[in-house]
Length: 117
Image 1 (cartoon, one colour):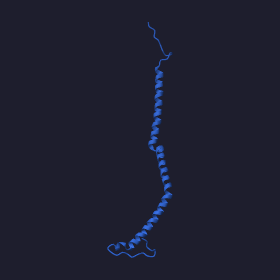
Image 2 (image 1 turned 90 degrees about the horizontal axis):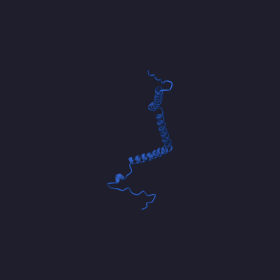
Image 3 (image 1 turned 45 degrees about the vertical axis):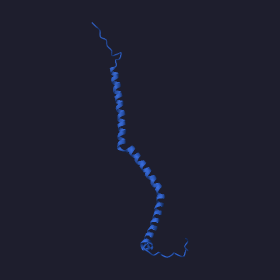
Image 4 (image 1 turned 135 degrees about the vertical axis):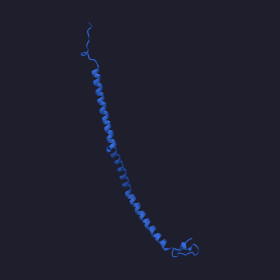
């Protein structure tokens, strides 16, 4: 079915007629829909322009925060301190064992023999 471009056609009458007639609310809704579509287009454009830099800054920010927490937080500092003190204590134990072993081993100059009478 083709209608001529100049003819709109008659408005149907019947129980459904009030729903089909244009009203001020429908015109306002159409205007609001047009404004919403324009706002959606501008929002879409803003997201396409600003989305990738925002996502990159979030990723790099999270990576920087993780690195800061790993290197400078109290737990990492305490762990490094424990590691240093553990190595130092091990070295002191090794030196002590070496000194005790050296003093306990008999040398040829300190051995004495007792004469029997």
